[in-house]
Amino acid sequence: NCRKCIENAIENGIPIDLVDHNGQSPLYYACEKGYFELVDYLLEHGARHDITDVNQQSPLWIASKKGYDQIVLLLLEKQANPNERANDGTTPIYHSCYAGHEKCVVHLTSHGGAVNLAKNSGASPLFVACRNGHHSIVQHLLRN
Figure 1 (tube, rainbow, N blue to C red):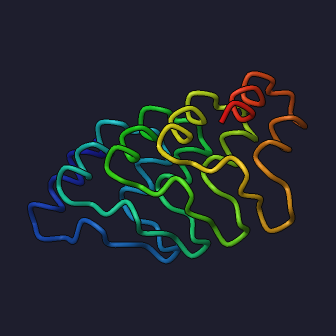
Figure 2: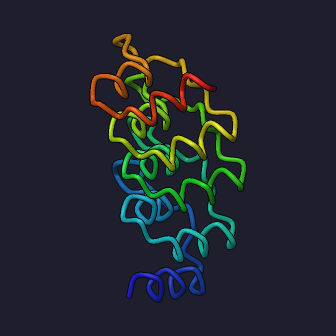
Figure 3: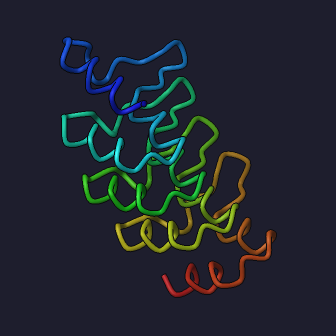
């Protein structure tokens, strides 16, 4: 499976943070697919959580967008920046608010995620949570 391939690659000297033509690392892909155990393995073996792809999207950014709350928490516990911005100005909390991933929003705000950082077009996390009807997220944002 995927973990066995990664373990084999690392054992054979392949750099753990090797990126593809999009600038995406094995950690990014593991976060995108929701492979918690693989994310944990990669982090324990020195994978950098701050490597971004060509759009400045990080592993935390994609895990937040996809709603993988346990991966989000793990990355935050490893000091991932909850306020990092992609090229379009979106933050991890923006996408969690947009999609209604409440647990991700809670993890991000409890680790310093700013609730008022708007993307380049001006839309804020609060705005998209309101627009998309995520009432409990709106309440959480207003309390923070």
